[in-house]
Amino acid sequence: MKARAAAIAAGEANELIWLLEHPPLYTAGTSANPSDLVAPGQFDVFETGRGGQYTYHGPGQRVAYAMLDLRKRGRDVSAFVRGLEQWIIDTLDEFDVAAERRCGRVGVWVTRDDGREEKIAAIGVRLKKWVSFHGISINVAPDLSHFGGIVPCGISEHGVASLASLGRDVTMSEVDNALKSNFGKIFGPTSAQ
Image 1: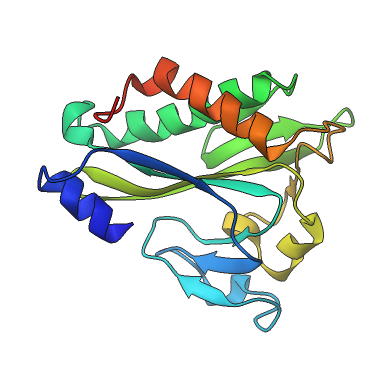
Image 2 (image 1 turned 90 degrees about the vertical axis):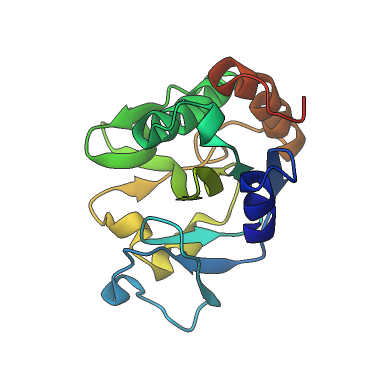
């Protein structure tokens, strides 16, 4: 990922989005608080260099690494993060999930019928020479108990949701298709298109 981002910055490669699933693991962003790693032996922990705190990645979660050239996209980090949030919101809307931003909290949130707010998607990015890497994760149908080994994104007062926990029987392929169809609406074409 770092090599690809460097090649994009040097004009030697096109922008790229990777869609993948990780084995169960925790990642630590540059703001990770060691006390937020509640169960340090549960899964391997990787220090990533991206922004943010601890998060979980694993089977049933779609991770999208976005290596985009922000020199061509306005050089506005806040607008880029809002764009990532909107990409997720529009994608989840295709599955009749009303997802929203929350002031002061990065990521995408849903509200349960009883008023509980839960995070359904996380965002953690880094930019180098105005090229982004790392990206987003959407909880499709992961084992939500795996989030219990960390304080996800440093937020202990809210839970974590998935499409499955919201009663949506959605395949990873369906999520991928929705991500692909919504990307251009937010960001326009990549330099590879």
